[in-house]
Length: 388
Ligand code: KIV
Ligand code: ZN
Image: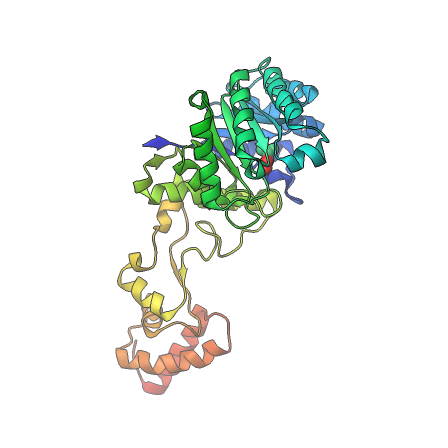
């Protein structure tokens, strides 16, 4: 099995989301939870950005025992110095530094040239080397960077000391095959690529962050940067729970992670509560509907064998039991099942009659509650002298 390093950036890219800002106490608490979850690298923050974030990275460095603690910086000497200081107490510190490499970034952001940016990339890795040997370089907007130039930059930063090379699809632009080919291109064209781990950092602007990250590891990357609930700039980052469960479900891929999947739902709820950011109900793995069945066809199959409509047992990901939701789209099997759960022992004929009553109520409501069923059952037994 090829081990995939899980690099969690909930506390950095995730925390950049408006409204999700955390104080130091909250960041330490979540960092400890992330370590318990089994993440390998915790990106704790961007220390130069504010005194509060410096303090957070500093305190997280003291609290974390096993995971690597990472701090972000731009390709600026002062940024890197401050990141290095913030990580002073970390048992396993990592500095994450880098610069935009697409022509758009080079011209519009830096008013510079490819050659100058190449030199700045080399320089920032050398500065980081004054603080740690664990250096990650990011080529911002690598998704839209010319592959030939990207390969040159990556070769040079590895030579300068980078041990992880991050290939961000910063704007979520790539299609999975394009992102996968980019990783394969680097493997085939960077002579010293075996000296570094390739990392995927994908954004979700087109809803492809998870697919792109998986394409990345299939083509040779060995680290995925992700967040709980897929939080992150704009449409977010790759969601941790999705990549972890794809890897777990698709044994054929031959990948593994250190994540304890049973903690995924509790962790998702915790992050959602602390960051005050609700999770969409239909979110894979951690949404409230992820294990709910509401159409009659699905409910009938599910009640005969859960695997007909569920590829993951909710227990595996720490979710509540699967739910059979009763709506006007539900069928007789689901209704009979729910009555049984409520303690009623109706015959098939009883259920046929009750089902017609049920549909009348269900057409006027979004969801039928147990109290509605109790009323139906009471009226029915009174009318038909059924003893239940
Ligand atoms: O999306 C991005 O390119 C980033 C980098 C800072 C790694 O977040
Ligand atoms: Zn990002």
